[in-house]
Image (cartoon, rainbow, N blue to C red; front, side, top):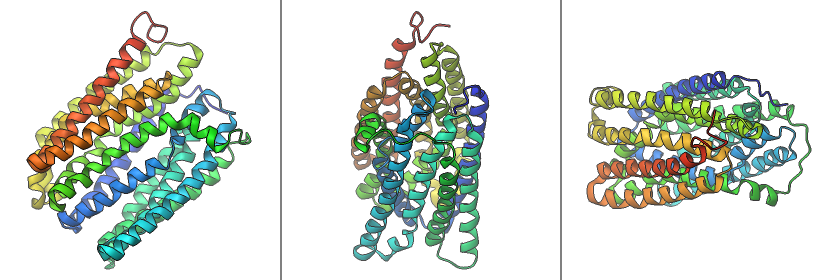
Length: 411
């Protein structure tokens, strides 16, 4: 049964705090990996992870967001059981596809790709665990999701350091440690969630995809941005890709707070709309958080020339302006995440998917052109511009929907 009485701010505190700690662990892991690998090798790893992450989103079919919203609106929906079964099938397919892809790259491009084979099971395990735990998240038990995530990140970091310390190749150590942690996380999620879903499946897979297709389109469009590293690497080389990846990937943890609130907003706003309550309190919370993270990004922008060499080493000094430019775009990215969550909750999933597709196409085309013109710095400006475009589209759609006088925006 859903627990609607859970405190919205309590859920946000759990999710944001947990994800911040998880992001810190992930950042530490990436810093260690970057220090063990040359920029060119780090660029190859970032390229593989980027491609695999896009594939992960493609095979998700939007079922994660579908489960969250469906559980909040109708806890006993049989569509949830259908979605969980479908997720198990696609997670298995994901692992198989990545294994084949990396094996082919290892045979025909470089044996280095064989060292990353365990990443297939990392991607599959994380996808399966996260999709299943959306059930307990929608129920209001965010602490379970947070504990699972932190355990997974910590186990991956400890495993990586342990393997490297005994002389195992760093790239393989990183891949294997992530895979083992993700598999354990997935096993826990399967056992725990099985007790919570009582309703029998009530949809066919085709019907499920019909319900979740717009969530899927938004997810694919969002994750397709990860191809930016691939584009930079193809047009400017692996070193430039490494510098750009240090900006676009290492700043990703800074988006944890807005994306955490966005994930909490979806079930909270869905319940509010279903009950005919105002969205104004949620809008105020989103605006306050946006102001706070913008100030945080400004502080990091100023400190970047000091902490980048300290954290990553002198080899990454050329990445400082790239990182600073991406930081300029993060407030726009935060704004887009928050607005899109509210738009999905009020039923505007088609618009969110369309806007995400437009901004992603713009991003990839702009990154390609800007990379040719100005290398990693140009690509960073293109990424920032794409964040601004998506934010403008989302705000322009949300404001009329919740303006004073509408039944969604009034107190």
